[in-house]
Length: 388
Length: 135
Image (tube, rainbow over all chains, first blue to last red; front, side, top):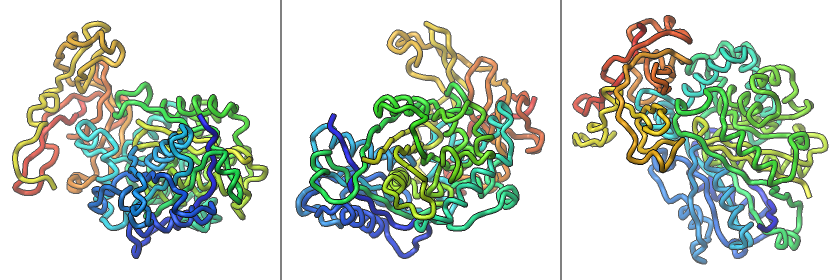
């Protein structure tokens, strides 16, 4: 496998972007990435797009072709494909784009993620997000994505003594980070009492434990190492791109409080990168709910199982702590336009590694990790990027 | 919304109505929903999966009271979703009904009951299936 580099990045702000269509968002992010990379559209060998649910959200499938067309790539008949892995679609697209360059098939590709969620009422969006679960045996009976995480949270509290306050602390931390990110949907800190007092979504989780409904797009340019060295600007090595899976339904799993897909993807990623956990300087993890981040930190092996709540409470995962987690604000505060999230995580790694993260800059950031989960844990990706 | 045609594959899916699971004839593991092959024994389980009618009794492992529902469940709010370990072993998801939401705890013993789950509009197909009630 060849060396693969991220050579450019671009994203839209995340949020309620009423005036923008999916194609507007995709093009804005893609053009930003191309400009940042210092390439032209004639350099692009292929386009990969991560999208979870445009077929239901805006009645549009074939997103790869749509974006390629409006990016002006269709005239050159550039190949394109949409990649779907629920709300890990962005990381899934990145993984396949990475493989296409690593294998030698392509030399330079664009990989983006995009989702347009705010055109529908919230109940419809909850319905569409629940399609990531097992329709016949979970969502049919009224399960939503957040209610699945809520059940994991309650079991986690029961088995490990995790407290409601520890869950809430994750949201407080991620909002404090998001306040420093100009692209974030929520750029203001929140108080612990606000999280505890917010309207319940699915007990024990409230509105401020859950990622918002967002519009947005993000894109990066990947090149082979040889091609990258001929380009100007900073480049970042993709030292691991790993995925693991698990059963679709929660009930068939080994545990209700752990994602084995995350654990195995992490083990494989560390092997690929030739790194140990202690060498990871910072991480973007899948905090689609507060319990999601607590489980992620445990399953990635940054603390023992059951100690994720204490880790959040202690400040060790906050900016300035020993392992800053979700410096972008995470899914909670940066926003969670499903298919765009995995790419936005990669962009946060690139900004940190390139010392361009401004007020949220992690000191001496050399090795960063991104963790993106599909649905309630049947799919997990771990990517490791390094400064070169 | 799906069309009003009455044809749906699940109308022929017994498991949704009578908790019919299956058991691997090789290793004895019990599954619900029934699986075409055993994920432990793989190919060696082919042709050896035996249908097994589950008793429908079990224990709540975890639960959530849902306030923000899926489309179609608005009139049921608040409803209790739970992960239930059946006495035969499988863990499945179901609603817990016939009690106040506050009555459900981790460890609560429940039994399955046959109920209406939802409907596809006023004149549409009605969905039936299992829910659970405290014992």
